[in-house]
Length: 167
Image 1 (cartoon, rainbow, N blue to C red):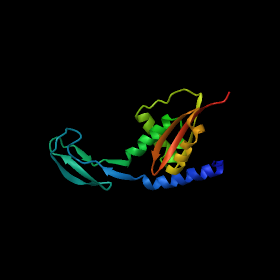
Image 2: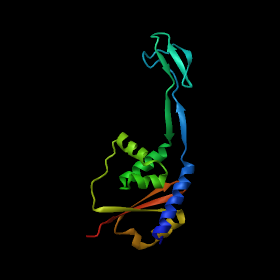
Image 3: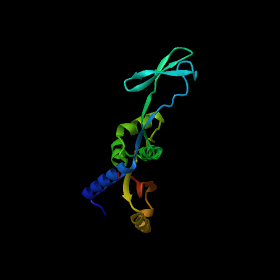
């Protein structure tokens, strides 16, 4: 069994490890038409703030290439939302996946995710490799008394277990 200090060190290790797997790219919008009149007849018209400026030949509207910003792989968006639904807090998700808790909050708002309001259960989670996971499930005591979910997390597995609060 991992003590609390060892568990925190393990979470820190997983956080650092997953930061190497998460990649973000800056993507620029491809100009196909004028944003004002939807015409595809435009010409270059200088550079403003290090961005190419265009002028529409039909409506004389000036526009630039819009920077869309960073994009995080959809795999991690799905994992973050799944962990949120499992009852983990934004900060716990941040520590596990290495993604800002503000990003997770924005995704929850964007996709209108609602967490069930049942407070009789408390999720606990463990990060295990495949050998530890097989040992965990080989013990009969771990197979009853609570709901369990196993999800892939990089090259490891996250085991989430719900237990009732003791009255």
